[in-house]
Structures are given as structure tokens and as C-alpha cells.
Image (cartoon, rainbow, N blue to C red; front, top):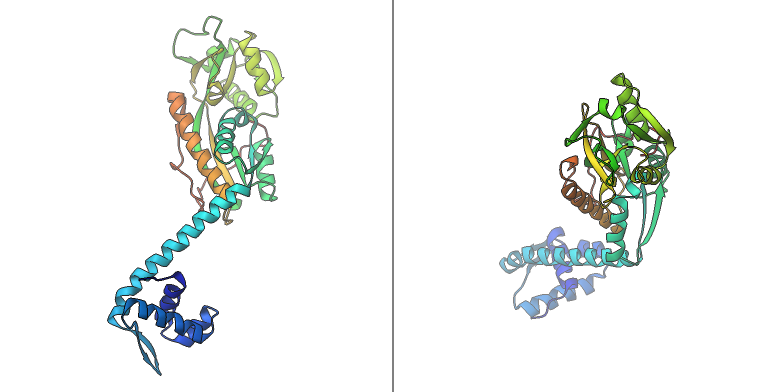
Length: 332
């Protein structure tokens, strides 16, 4: 027995419409051509599939048996075509990803490495700036995805924002120097008494820590301010002082020692944003899943300072999360 998809498609359409002429029009075929396909299928199966009458065509018992099987085979064929199209897209696609500076030196580096290894022909573009600037680029069609830090307010209306990780801020010092405390935690009041390296005012982290010190009525002992993330970490490694940083940036940095910050615990949420109501291209969908998987790996490696808050994997469909929104204009 030899059946082809054209025959099954013709059969399913006649069964749906109950009329050969209308089915031929729907399939953009001449009616004699469609009739030949049905006749050939009936000959191959050795059974009539339709009761033909002037008022229309109805299924025979053989036709009723074949119809669910035909629909399943057509659906399977469509699924195969979609998967092959996605693979073809990944051979020549493009992904434009935006991320904040601290994420670029940590999570994004691993994401891009994993994605490029699996899909070396996909063109990658990266924009590095603060959350607000990234959302502006996303709104302007300049980005497909943006990794941002979120707090609250208005992004849910313009974007689909999916939280990935909730991350603690920790206090870091040089591993070669004595630890700032002999415990596993340190209070903000104790940090205020240590020589501290603080970020540029353009960083959201600077706003967060300044606000925390101000709320507690504390004035930190600042030995150097205005540095970017890489510089802050290098200065700490050299023993110039301590710094309050996201836990993520400490992964694979053996020259630094970290201690958890308490009283209060300071956190940030890392989220993935994309345009709402726009279906992502195949390569963008795969990038979403790569980001989700990498975020899970980071959470597992970090222990208690980072936890996964998003779904285990991101599909290409919309996953709007009410509430999360961009952090202020600074960089983080």
C-alpha cells in the first residue's frame, strides 16, 4: 500500500467540507485532480471512502476509520516540517541580545559560549548597558531579548518579562587577606566600618547600597569610588578594600572571598524581557531556552546566595509575568 500526503490532505479536506468542489477550491486544485487523488487512494486501500451524492459526500465506515489516522499523519508531517524549518533557521539566523554589565561578565558569557558552540552559524549581537536603556532598545526593535534587573512598575504592559534568578548581594574581600569576619555572615553595620570600594554612580548597585546605608543611618568608609565592575573586583583582589557585589560575579574567581550580607539581606532579580505579542524567531527561541538552562546551572552552583525563580525552560510562547519591571536608569 502506498499513500502520500497529498492524497491524505485531499481526503481530509473532502471529509471536512463534505463536498468535492469546495475541497478542491480550498486546496487550490482542479476538481478532476482532487477526484483522481481520492480515487487513487481508494484503489490502494481497496475500499470506498465516501458515499457520493448530488447533495454532498459523506464518509463510509472505511472513511470514518481512516479519518483520525489521516489527521494524525498530517499533523506529524506538519510537526516535522516545523522542526526542519527551525533547524534551517538556526543555520542562518540572528539573535540580538542585551544585558547589563554585571551579567555580561558572568551569566551572559556562559550563555553565549554554550549557544555559539551548539549553533556556530547564528549571528550574535550584544548590547551592554543599564536596564532602562536595554528596554528602550527592545521597544525600538533593536533587540530580540534583554537580560535586565527588575524591581517593580510598568514593564509588563510593553514587554513579556520572565524572572529567572533572585540573587543576593554579598561582601567580597581578597582571598589572600584575613577574612573581614570569622562568621559566615556580616552585617551592614560591620561593612560600614571596613574600607570599601564603591561603584560608579551610573550603577544601580550603587543606588541600592547607598539607600541601604542611608536607611540604616550608616556612613560607609569609602576608600575608592567611581569604578566599573571589573575594576572593583581587581581592586578588591589587590587588598584595597571590600565591596558589595552580586553573588553571580564571584563564580570562578578564586582570588576573592565572599561572605553573606545580613541585617539587611539585599537582593536583585534577574529577568528576561522580550517584546510582547511577537512570536520569536527559531534562533531567538533557542536562545531563550539556553538562557533559562544556564540560569538554572548558576543557581545550582551558587548555593544559598542565588535561587531560581522562573520556569525550568522558556518556550517560544508568551509568558507574561505581572509585576516585574525595569530597575532605574543605572547600570548593574
